[in-house]
Image 1 (cartoon, rainbow, N blue to C red):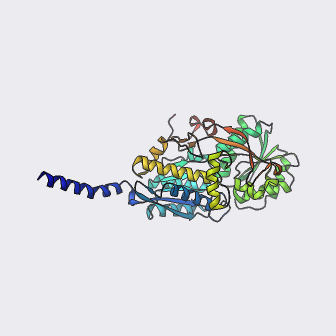
Image 2: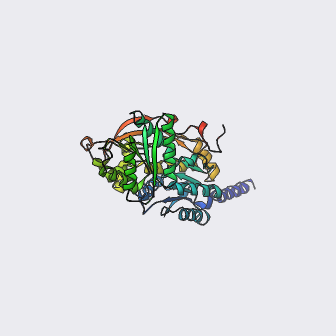
Image 3: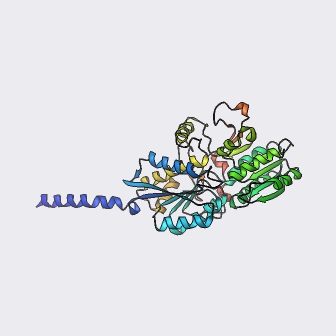
Length: 403
């Protein structure tokens, strides 16, 4: 009788264990959505590179977590907030996507993070930069991982102010990211007794910056700061060379410069640009090793968004593994608990406001004569420690932060 009872218990346990294991993962699959610009002016910063980075992270994780397969779905948001929002809702409601990542374009990121909150799923932002994402627009379901406008303005602004370049004119992209970047840079200037001599907004898709550059030239500002990104930023830099902005004594500053932008411009046009970034492929052995693998797939070096997509996806999967579930609240808590140590960040951590805190780096673009091999574009000017790179929690407008 005892043997029969024991055998029955063992059989029952064997039957129930797989079902129990499956309940740890909703729908039996962990689905990651990469929502990015696949075809527009930000596709060189996000797009296929972002998708590749996320897929690399999944492959390196073994394609499974807690015994459940990991699937990656991809969509092009076309830089249209309504398209992005509709896609996010359809992914969460119909395809049962657990986490959406990348989200280049701040207007889109701000919308999708709110949908993640509404649907109790997770959004991890790497492509977009608006510091509002961990400020007044923070949510308990979102993480801002790679960089933000405060860190960019803080790094590049202080570097130029230290050279005595204390009067600025802004050429600002007319959308959420541009406004946040100009606002954060202006705050840095005013804190150091700098002055803004003027500002002009340019349409996101513009290819002709002539009238804007003439106003910047007439301002006599020491710095002409371009608060924008993508193809339009590249065109603005080229036009500034044609207008003789630099040769006329003004300094052109790119407040967000991707290494893909520098590659498109060429060192002849980009030399001397001071920029702040979270990642440079040639910084150390670990960055070079991962970049070499990425290059083999993409035939270009990774930017900070690509590196952030890989690192944050890996951190998300590690959190699921440690938590024993893909439940959004439990995984978010575990992501904030676990430190981040990889090629992207050393002792990185996620704060209560969703900001992933890590070192940032100020670089200067090399002269052509100083570049020794392909993609050898930057020389390091300063390392900004994690505790001073991002907006202090004491200054945060995030309602999740207790003061």
